[in-house]
Image (cartoon, rainbow, N blue to C red; front, top):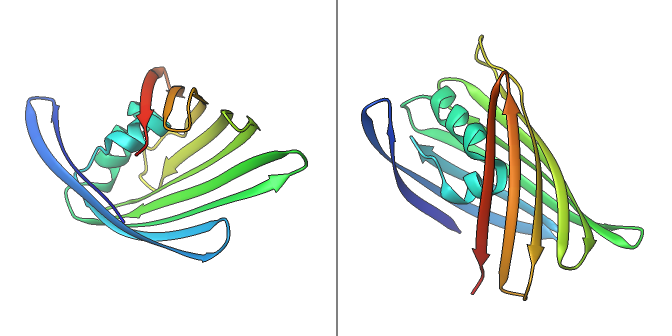
Length: 161
């Protein structure tokens, strides 16, 4: 179960959004989740995928409540683990995001992502990211996203409890 309440001030408007999600693990390493979101710029998603990707997602889905479907699969490939994930929002338009991470060792991952939507003037967003765990509960991550002359850089911290 996952939830977020957030407020975004954009173009002079204050918007309070929310996101709720429920997931299920049908087999080891596979997470399937369904949720709802309304004008949400989820800070966890911003940390993982960059601000540009999430803002464009929120603007594309529109003001109606959107349904989300998400899948995440973690598996071992050779001596390393890999994470594959996909997320779609269905609202005024449909957005989708695909990503993959390779865990170079148990504490360091690097990954790529791509996002787009069904909106007529939509541009594809490309991203790269990395995360380093210093302890099992504390990590620092960086990400970069780019789309048609708009670049976004992010630095995030993670604390798991």
